[in-house]
Image 1 (cartoon, rainbow, N blue to C red):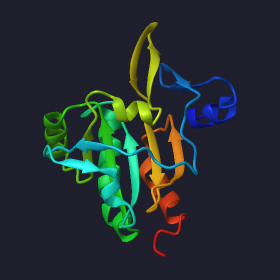
Image 2 (cartoon, rainbow, N blue to C red):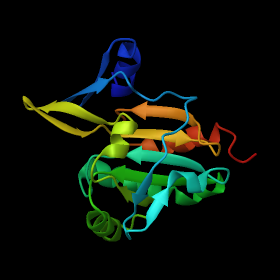
Image 3 (cartoon, helix red, strand yellow):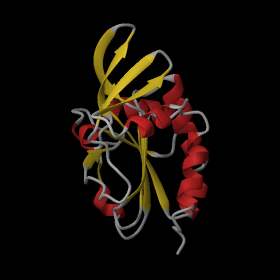
Length: 188
């Protein structure tokens, strides 16, 4: 069963659990839901320029995806897939933004090494990740630590969450998200 289904089934409890590979994520109940306003943020990009969620309001939809770490296999696949679909997202008046706790220098090296063209933002202190409910405790090989649960949010031009996807699988995810964006009527 995919992790997102596990979360949907258990979302009525105080915690939901997402299993990806050999990792068990414990996700607190404070998950964002479609219909809520997206929490605002101002974060630096790979070029150390501050990007505000508010700058897209009334102009662009936003695909905001959180990923664990630059230059790891799953994160690289996801970033490249989103980059490959940049023109399709742009035609739907949508910008794709990736967020991790890596610093700006790491983002720049990751972007340049793989030819990534989506915005990569640095949430070094994890504050934005916490507000989106993606910074969670996990257990890997019997040890507990805090990390980002790979998650994606589709935000419309009014700043409202249309989709909140926690514990996603990077393989094929960009195409799935593109289909979700097409469904929100972004070209109206």
